[in-house]
Image (tube, rainbow, N blue to C red; front, side, top):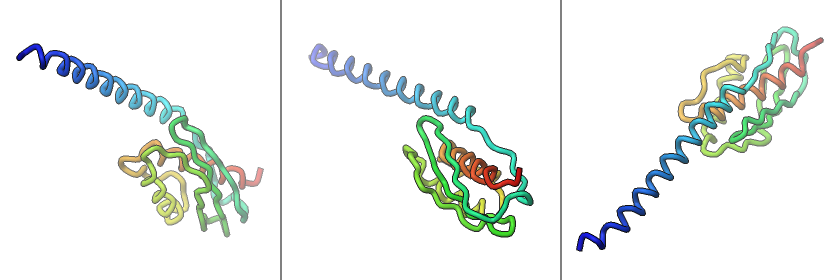
Amino acid sequence: MKKHWKVPVIILGVFVLVLAGLYGWMTLTAQRQLAAITYEKVDMARVADGVYQGETDAGLVSVKVAVGVENHAIREIRILEHQNGMGSGAESIVQTMIEKNDYAVDAVSGATLSSEAIKSAVSKALYAGQAK
């Protein structure tokens, strides 16, 4: 009777090891992509009225935004594209950026990579609107 359980237990063990390896790989990949995200330095006093686009590709997550500025204040942030895996909750971060008139806000818990990608894209859009 013990022999009947041997093969299923081995298969289950291999399956668990594969899942653990996949999880580890995805975590490491996300950490590397997070570390590679860049942000532009923005002085809102130099950002002219208009709508500007910015985008960031962080591998597992990519985002494209349109940012509306009026009187040196962020009035609107539209997410045009967001390939996010499971980070769609990060999209709520745009309201905080509008309220604070800054892209440098806290990330949404549980959606850090998507949050940082959105912040990066917004920083690039605002940078495009700065008077040179």
